[in-house]
Image 1 (cartoon, rainbow, N blue to C red):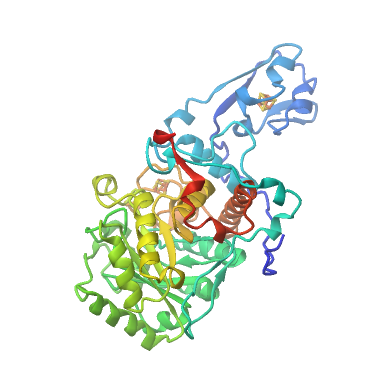
Image 2 (image 1 turned 120 degrees about the vertical axis):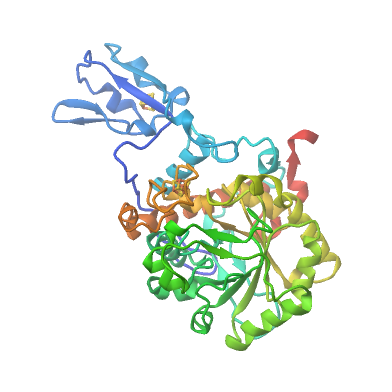
Length: 494
Ligand code: SF4
Ligand code: SF4
């Protein structure tokens, strides 16, 4: 599998759950009446039943598609030894945005590198708004593209659109990993994301907690972040990378800055952030050196003086004048990327009151910025990246149709690593899955090979789904979709 630019994508390698009993939507029960005839093993298309040494077992409960099964084993069993019912544990998972179906379908993609073929909703959540109220409309000339191979449909994204001497960077999928700092997540999580980004020809961002040595082999695929706390910011790391991101605000908690609880400030984190072990760390809001476009320009110039070829990304939340911020960033010389962070994202460390009540939803902010940059005649000079609550490839396609060029992911990567959205991320030993932790014992629940491959698989599944969407829209390139709001319908206005 290669891209139009000749980039060779990695293979999907089936990567099973690291837990003995992965959570699925259905539960299959076998009674002692089973005569081990093997009928269920023969007919189940999902490999739920296995036969070993003359005995038959239910080994992969979580893969059962239940009521959507074309030829259910419980009907075919000659002695009625099988029954299938909904798994009650499944119904305790998730929330309205990240529903249990979206969690399980993302786990499926991370295991198989494909969207689930049946049994799980993998396109939308159940929030009653935002992306969940938007649908893509497929009126395109599909037949035009029916015979062309997947690899001839281009989903890559050029990041530097200014005619200057800074790096030319093309990412092979219109998605990259948003900032997650050392401290908020483990080094294993960070390196898994970085390794996956390198394999997929895209990028991953360090977040604001410094640049651990373990990321150095992935320098060409890293974005380093300069945030208000300046934790771990060094000239050496700014020179190391090709993109530097200023984090002015985060969509999940605009106006609040950052807060790392003391129990996550382990000796390693304290060393990296030049802080004291066990003491909480605050990133203030805002940058107290920036109150105007001119101040912002000084920031950009500072980066350019240290690393003249670096691209400068500006991460902002979505206040009502975000369109002015975008244009101001352009004129300040902020290099290429305006990274709009909407309010749907954030891990369990972002307070709910902020996530639900501050900042504009991303689906309003992106078209506003897209149109204003067009009116100012600079849209083709800026790359617009959207983030904050991108959960599925359908969300990616929708936000691009609204005017973004590409997206950043955060929570989706963690879900690929088997996050269950329990919202305990802020506490040092809170993450029972060993993802958003700095506790050395919990971090060992995961290894980098496994983590990287799960994220690779998920991104490969997203790429396939994006190509499927473009094919149905009759488009040969993701660029054709940018700003095409006529490809969307809002369910309230059908
Ligand atoms: S109901 Fe269908 S998918 Fe589920 S275990 Fe039986 S044959 Fe497999
Ligand atoms: S599983 Fe870990 S990363 Fe996911 S919500 Fe819970 S604490 Fe946070």
